[in-house]
Each structure stands twice: as C-alpha cells, then as structure tokens.
Length: 427
Image (cartoon, rainbow, N blue to C red; front, side, top):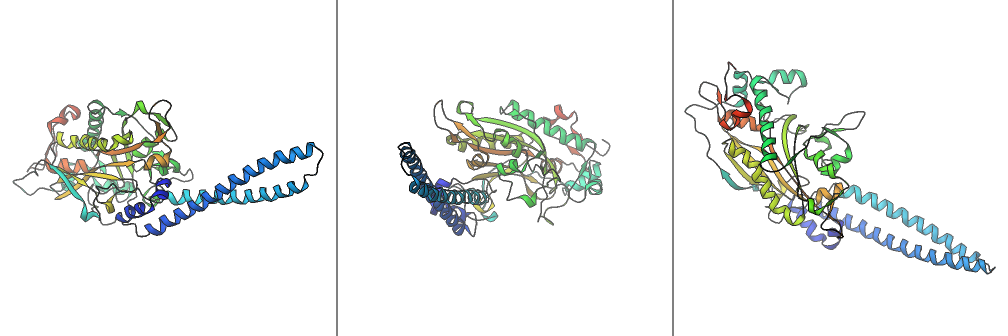
C-alpha cells in the first residue's frame, strides 16, 4: 500500500501520479485520506497530552491522600480526563480502521519513466528475432491441436464449461516438459530457489500482494472455508515472508515456483476466447524476488532478461513492451510485458509480465529487512515475473513450428527433456 508519510509530505505528487494512472477520483480520495490522517494525529496528540496529565495528577492525588488531605476535586477532574481519553481513543481507532480500508484500495504510484495513457501508449522497448515465414497459410493452434489429437476443447467444455481445455498425449507431455525445463533453467542458470506452494490461500494472503479487495470478482473463492484459489504463484511465494524482518545480508532472495493459476476473467467475454488464448485455469512458472530498494531497478532488468532467455532458447520472435500508467497492474510501479508472435492467429501474445512493486506489497504484507546489524528496519522491494506462462507459450510453439503437412517440429533444445522432437497425427 502507499506510504501514508508520502501522502502527508507531498499529496500533490501522489494525486498527480494516480491521475496518470487514470484514477478519476484521485484528488478526492487523497484529500480524504490526508484529512482523516490529520484528524487522527491531532486526536492522538491530545490523548498523549491527557495521559501525561493523568499520570501527573495520579501522583499528586496519591501525595494528598498520604497526607490525609481531600483529593475529591482532583479525582472528579480525572474522571473527565478519562472520559475524554476514551472518546479520543475511539476516534483514533475508527480513523485507523477507515485508513486501513481506504489505503488497500489505492493502487501503486507509477515510476516517472512510465508513459502517460492507456494501452495505446504502451511503448515497445526492444524486439528479438524475426517472424517466421511459411510457404503455406499458417493454421491457428486450435486447428493444429485438434488435428494432431493433442488439444481437446470439447472435453474441457464438457467437464468444466467454457474457458477450460484438455491436453492429450504429446500435448500434455509438451506442457509438462516445458514446465520442468523452465524451472530447471531458472534454478541452475539464474540461481533461483525452487519452492512448491499451496494453491489455496487465505484472504489475508491475497490482500498482501494486492489481489484483494480490488480483484475479488476476478478470483475464485471456496465455501465454506473462505480460501481463495491462487491467480498466480506470486501470491503464496511473496507471502512466505509476510510479517518477517529479513537479514539484509541475505538479499536478494530469488524463488521460482510452478503452479496452476485460476482466474474468473469476469468481463472478458468475447475477447480472444478461441482455443487456449484466454482460459480460466492455466499453468505458469513464476519468478519472485526480494530486493534492497537501491537494487530493485537493476533487478527488474535482470528478471526481464531471465524470462526472455526462455523465448530466445526456443527461437520465438518476441518483443518487450513498457506498459503505460493506465495499463499497469494495481500493485506495480513499472512493468515490462513479454509478447511473443503467434503466426497462426497473427497476434502478439503476452507470456510474461515482469514488475517492480517497490515497497507497495511489502507494506501490505509487513515484509521488512535490516540493512546491517543494529540498523533500523525498512521495507524491502518485491518483484515478480512469469518465467513463463502457459498455455500461450504452447500456442506460439505450435504455430511457429508447424509444418505444411500439419505436424509440428519442436526446437532441438527441448529434445532432452521431452524425449521427442515433433508431434504428428500418428503420435
């Protein structure tokens, strides 16, 4: 969440940053927060004055009583003081609750380098590779998958409804192999620690990374337990260190985790719904980092490069896109999207979002670090990125490496993991 201290010091900057995001009521929201915070601090200051007065009076009353005097007048005054303290304590408590509820609904401030505007203002930072050329009209993945017997959309719909898929045979093996290969590469080459995490989490955990309360309608929740199905492994992995103080010497901490991801995609009806382009359940390998604040900017560049390394090894044409302020995720200060070219559908498909959240998530989840022994604690910075997300990676692979006869010849780098180099209708 936002630093209330920043709201106090420079409300104008906070308002301007939120307006860059397109938050229409930014001025009213921040003014309301600042006013409630001011009233809280005034009440707290008065409470402290009255408590100091009460402590002095208690000593005086004790002295009068020891000397056999009448302290009834002082006692009556103290009754009034106690009543005023109780009233002010209630004011402070109510303000604390109000501020806590308000602050968790306000998004992060975009970095100064983030362009103003929405999706149309996203900026292409760089591009790698060249789009594949075919001596035939490339087919979309749903045609390829069904003709090869590896993608069963009908079965997915029958079992769970629209937005779910079933992979068969070498299609299922390809996805499993990609997951194992990506985790192995990030662990061995990029030095991430592999973790396996729960897929059901508490509301507090979802709130810690910013999914709640903003995205409650986009998420699945179980009843009667009130546990939430994770939309990404970022949620449980980041919360591994919730309410902890980390040793600055141990930073950075780098984790890689596989998980299925569950998203209701409310409001997404009709958008890229064919095949595996937009589904309610998908697999993803996630990278999460805990960094010192001064190192997080460089860490984001490194993280983005680590995710892009997968695409390069697979020989897939991709581009890196800097998201504009209006297209940023709720918790992000700066995000690079990795988009891969899928020739069958003739579209750029997002396969990774690499984000620097700065101290936004750390404040929500109470994750601090001690820079050095004896130093005061501070909030660290969190980052994450997909490394990579499936099934859009599968879409790009199938459509990029399709052959005229309808088969798919896979990149050689996958052969040791998969045990096969292609997919044909006979497989």
